[in-house]
Image 1 (cartoon, helix red, strand yellow):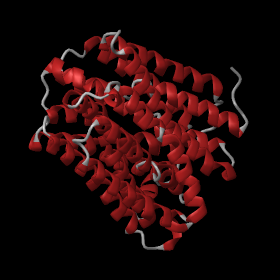
Image 2 (tube, one colour):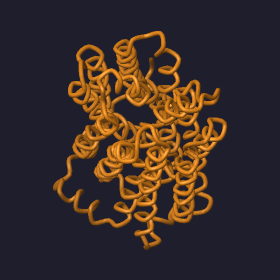
Image 3 (cartoon, helix red, strand yellow):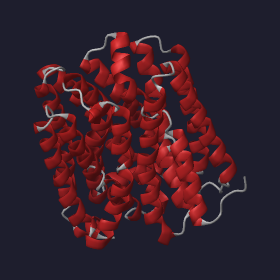
Length: 404
């Protein structure tokens, strides 16, 4: 494969690699009912298993993403994509119980810290400034494509294959991602090392605009990953209670819900360009919060009512995603953009860790087999995005929030 040079080909290579690297992303959420039964897990323990992935992410991302200000992000991407394959293969071969599963799934989350945002940094470093915002929107939207395809292929194969084999196949997908970036993206010279690395962190931590984006991303990921971690389990519970053709294949519904993130994310970034980033975010985040509460009230309804609401809610929660990330990228100077992305990712994916756990705790408190438990879980998602709306509202200065 010849290294991509045009902006369009660069975006295509990185987006394809992202899809393959995320082949295993939905393994634990999709298999959560199966693994919970296999290992006799409580809802709280299952929430830990869903959230530990993001704990691995947030522990590694400050180091790995800030490192992209000093070395070519492509190198970090390649190393961590390979680590992702190792973690998935380790889960397939060695996860014989809850504790071992936590360890290998945590390592997979750590690997994501070295592929997702470093991949974005490697891409934007190679794009002209005029193409960076839309390149960022397509790349971040592809996260939804990868997650959706992950749900879909697992749903279509899990009845025929053992769960260790599913993890092994996802490890093969990570290997393809390594090959795509290794062969399709040429290395570039490492940036000159900063005279004082601490200066970058002082600049980032002292920038109220960046902190507002970080807090909003925290709330967004709390909602998004809490929803994705428990969606399949919710549909399995709903089908067991009120059998319905709409809930008979929960993985397909989860895939569709995740695919909706792609147009919603891209359109969200375009909306931010058209009407102003601050105005857009302060509108769509309350909309998502409201729909979370609507779903909570309808959690005991039949599938033909619940599933369309879930899909509408899934689309709404992604209207802010690319707008937030593109806003941070465009508002941050290139010489410390990696450090800003490191903080943004660490804070944001802390929400991804808390969301599944908070949902699981709500289920245990109000009853995993009771509609009140699932209603409480969706209320916890509303709390997450509500916090994100509060955080973006704290940026009262028009500079970062309203620039396009």
